[in-house]
Length: 341
Image (cartoon, rainbow, N blue to C red; front, side, top):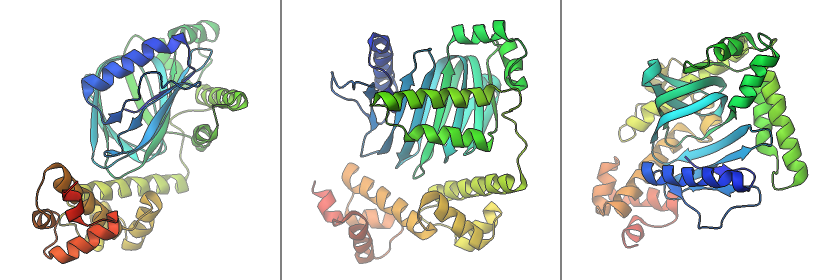
């Protein structure tokens, strides 16, 4: 996973080394910066441009809170397995896209959709996250240090959100709970992506907003399992149906179903599917499938050395001339030019 670490000081040296060790061990699709590329506000890693685009930003605040912002887009699905995940207590909130999460120790294997909040803690022996292809995934996490968690319990036992308080009381037992987030939490989280943390004022505003979000999540009058309005339920169901449609197209891209058949399979009418798909991905279903085909064709030609004719056939084009035209329209160069690079 891509990472920008927050304030550049000695506290980050060990974090930076652990991140690099993880990257090398897991062989993630990252561009690792040259030594000395730490910014005044932290360290930045970005996805290798040949694999996708995006970043993860991580800041450590003066009170010990660690905040990570992600905004990722992969050309191919990426599966990331973390072992011995130690979190005293924390929240994660997904704002766009979806992730598949599996935690064998908790017999948990499910999709996390946009608008869902996960609160977690304890030592998880293994956790696997799968980031989908051709889908923007954006969200954040807040990790709370042990000293802060212990202080909360000592100062205000039972004074926090009931769901959170119950987990903190049994904090030695690992847990991961997922539920819909409130609209207010989503808005507060979304705002964190707007601050310029390279300036003093931006960092102050950023930290204040993090604390505001955290206070909302811990408020006894707020609950991660908030009751959704009818409109919110419709939106969440639409999001999940579109995510299902994307999964189907990622598997069946070479011979995709018709839009009407796809709509039936995900439980939407044709117009809802088309409108929702465009709102989520920024493209039509037809353009999405063509992009999938072109990206795979380029991989076949550049990385595997197959002929243009064979690449065309493998991505579902029976006419090589039509394939070459579509390829040039998408990338601005002919497939033959890619093969000679």
